[in-house]
Length: 105
Length: 182
Image 1 (spheres, rainbow over the protein chains, first blue to last red):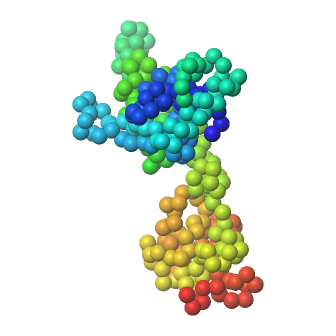
Image 2: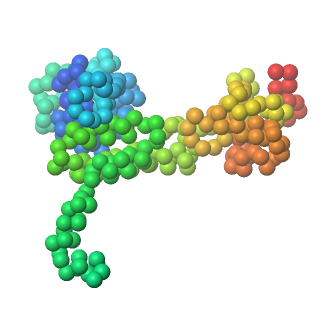
Image 3: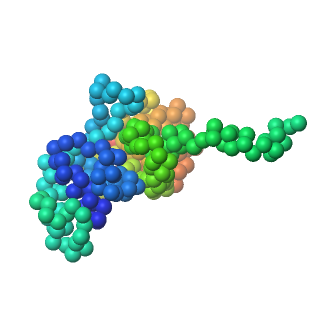
């Protein structure tokens, strides 16, 4: 997958909680990537099997709304995104990207 | 006095009406997600996400989804329709040509072999003539069976004939029926 600023920011947001569930809107807020860019990235990650998807259990929803789709990192995804972040730290294009400096991949 | 003239004279009433017919992000989002294929999970995902977006941000968020839907959903539909791609970045090739190259892999039945087929019956040939989506395998069978009921070249899809995606089942030298005795 081509390394872009958006991908790095999404990777940082996903690796903030590597075992947790991530939601589209929450990821967009956390990474600062607008949804027009975020969703295609998530689709590519799904195709690469870096993340798996699932739907909220309707029984656990207290408000009146439909179940949301969540994304979870796979082991393969954790390794791949970790490697991407490691490379990005050495890449001059990503110097000064918030959240990248000092992150252990 | 007509209702229009009363509205023109009373600007307060007009603004009240505008406020009543206010922008409804949920409605527009439901229109936008129609750009995605019917079985695309993004449709339900976006609608579910909308209600977690703060009210003030919703119109802007919906506009962002319009961009996503145009480039992810609508564009994909156009590409699939124009290039016969089954899935984005995949291209539906000619089964006939492939089968001529590798006779043991897959095939399309001859017209005589297709005659006993009925809708939804499984056939050896699985090549879809035109269109997009792997789900059209079944439609191919339907077409074949319609052809069987009313034999004749006119019952074959004209587009498929133009693309050469119907196979006569002949061997590469054109001398015999490949599927005779199957």
